[in-house]
Image 1 (cartoon, rainbow, N blue to C red):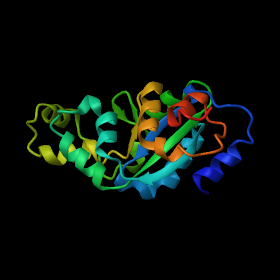
Image 2 (image 1 turned 90 degrees about the vertical axis):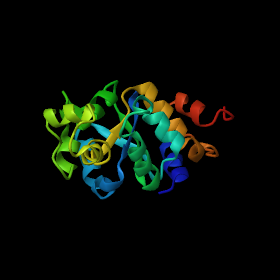
Image 3 (image 1 turned 60 degrees about the vertical axis):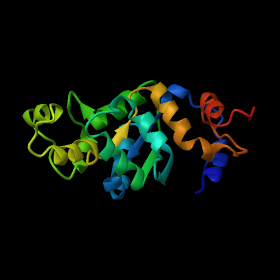
Length: 198
């Protein structure tokens, strides 16, 4: 189902989804084939996917999403990986104000891998000692650990609602520009995606 059909169908639902019930995530390139199982985990935790698309992220998107990591020793390699391989971007919905919290917990809990990373990460996460050495750039396998921590960790999720809306605008904005039907997405999103439509 194309995006226009998807949202024309959604317009039948009269209740508008509040912006705080929307979040953003993307599945990293090596884990795209795991998407059906990841979707099931999201559903089992009360989340649904409003929209998904397989794309290559551009450099501006990576710089925005990972702005807190710019300048870090692993950043260039991660950026190259994510701008040369397709990811699956997800617009995620969850009832109430818990969508960010639930999504983050599926990724990581108390410094440990959450359900999604635990189940699909092909290699085990590094130990705290390895992590300390890596942070100091003293690990004997520095590059390998960088790949494991930043490229092979299955999923990226926004940390908060503001970050989610910013990422959605930057990455999906053009896809929503010419839609005649807005479906039941929140007004805040339509204002972001297409400022000309009233």
